[in-house]
Length: 164
Image (tube, rainbow, N blue to C red):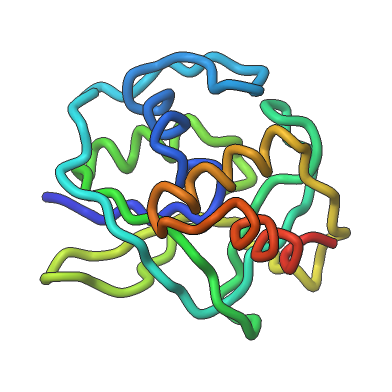
């Protein structure tokens, strides 16, 4: 079974996602990942727009600063990246995330294949926002440029809108 893994944070960057699939440490990050049991490449990659908003909260042990979370219940528009991966790869990516990503969401489907992401069960209204690190934002910027073809300026404007 395949799923579209939908990332709205640093995993929009293909180099960052590769750390989850193949193992390794992302540029600017502070953790080395084991990788997935199946390290094959995603079959496809698409840009996705989701209703709702990304917010930053907590303290990332990988990047320092706030982590990105998705709240589908808030007004807004979220730019995201979908990777067509196996169900096992999706599970392995999720297993390498910190336990605060404890809510799996089905956010639609494409060509009969589910679009799936993960976030926190705690919404933006129940947390204190925290500023993300420059390295984290740079990785998100790279992903936005890759998947949507945005300029750095457009990606930075989008990310500024999300920050506390």
